[in-house]
Length: 332
Image 1: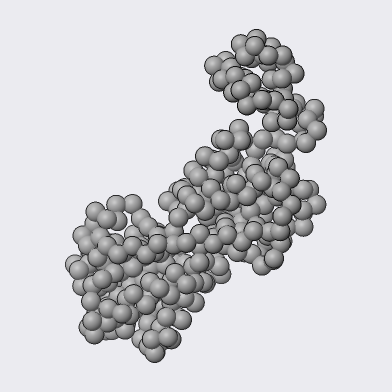
Image 2: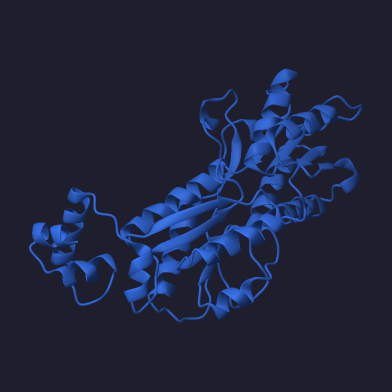
């Protein structure tokens, strides 16, 4: 720390204030200190710092997402890291894989690490909220909305967006529409299922005409599920795939049968290279970067003392027509 102070031209106490994010240091001075920290590759001893700092912060936050290898979760992860970097805070991330026991374990592990706050993609209604409140650990929920008016949440309108996607297919003459979805115990999957069914009801389409397959959590399961439907006596003329990995599997099933230009497809969540495929993939595009940014900013506001009522932020989705969702049905 003495070397950092010497290079920055300040006292050791000033260096301590800067690296511990304490007040009463000018922006110019802080910039010189952080420059010296980077030049000297100085690493702050968080454990020792906690013993001295009045606020007890570790300058770390925890991020719990569905799976860090899912493009949607990865985009949220990167967005959170971008905001955390502005605050000189490290992000610890963990995948939940829709497992509530894994979620409980991850939250407990982060609390033992004494993270300053959490951003979570909860798999169910959490029962660790009381513990977080007792320990003064703020939490922001993303993507899924737990019950409770006193919780900060940043999410998309899954139900309305799914209804719009389904209505888009119906408007092009489709009546036999397949829904491929994740486990309905996952809130987002259930909301997308409800939006799908509502659109059918509003159009007066009997639900028996729809093929609904749930409990799909990966690309291969989606490929097999849609393959069985396409090979049946009454195959769907359109597909609504309610998750990005499911969309990948649906695309494979269609291409294996040469049906990509005959069976319409709309996916929930954008996917890489969707505009370069033939046909391009029509999607309900969420904005994971915006979700991550908003969630992180709310969390850091809470850490800085924001005591306003809980925020419920709905990040708009964008319906992107690229060709696959515009293939006409028998009545189109």
